[in-house]
Length: 308
Ligand SMILES: Cc1cc2nc3c(=O)[nH]c(=O)nc-3n(C[C@H](O)[C@H](O)[C@H](O)COP(=O)(O)OP(=O)(O)OC[C@H]3O[C@@H](n4cnc5c(N)ncnc54)[C@H](O)[C@@H]3O)c2cc1C
Image (cartoon, rainbow, N blue to C red; front, top):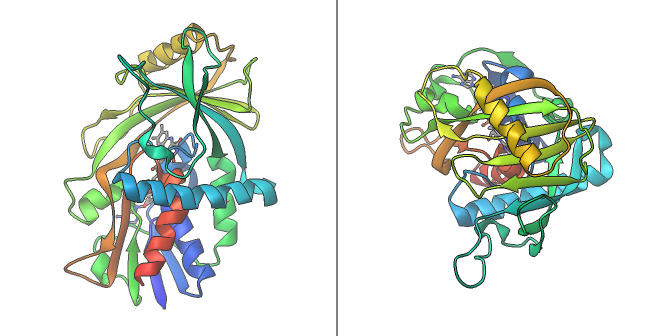
């Protein structure tokens, strides 16, 4: 089939890759590439944060995890490494803690949290992609030409099928009010003295989430997740970085100096939209991956291919 993929973030590139692997002839059209996409701002650890619905997300995440783990073993240039993850959740008031909803098919166990002031956490393994390596790696695998242009009408694009991988752009392009921006911010800091084989998420305070994601030669600290005015560009919040650094210190994490801060807008929807458009069946939507685009990319791309 001749397929146009609209969008060149992690979702568009991964979709194009899977379609080509399965014998389709692909072209990509995207308004922005590389560093100018939301995908470039991500952590990007395999953890299904702010994405639904739960059963589909668990299946897409499992498929993506297997692929990322294979890349970690076989393609060092992809920038994927497997870390040990710890999620610190609120202490149960009575009884046993509730097993995490995202853990279907993953080995997750209770373990001492490797930080100050939090006795227990969920421990698991988590693949982490480094966007500055992973996005160029995907581009290097994809043969499709990339045309840089803003698409105004999906139904007018060429091909037997058009796959809409425009992230937040779908709010306008697919006229979808259920999709909205969730602000996120990270600080990239020197690795300091932390254990770079371990990623930690502290979800105890939903208004002040914290995470630490080691990369090759640097450390990502976050985070934040708050609704943002649609259409407005993501602006850095300097006070937020101070709060995040304070949390790292309070947890006893010996993080280094700040190199750069980055803000981005997660394309959030209660449920990822992955379906044929009811009015234009040639159009297949694949957007709304929230805080989990890297976590779900391969599984979603394979589901798109199954719809063709
Ligand atoms: C601070 C932060 C931390 C995150 N951490 C993680 C993490 O640890 N793990 C994880 O899995 N996810 C994480 N995410 C979420 C992840 O970044 C997103 O889910 C993912 O980037 C979405 O990818 P996408 O390809 O759909 O969108 P994008 O990367 O935004 O790409 C959209 C593409 O569509 C194009 N486009 C849009 N509109 C049009 C149009 N009209 N015409 C043509 N092209 C168009 C854009 O130019 C771009 O090429 C994080 C996000 C943020 C902000």
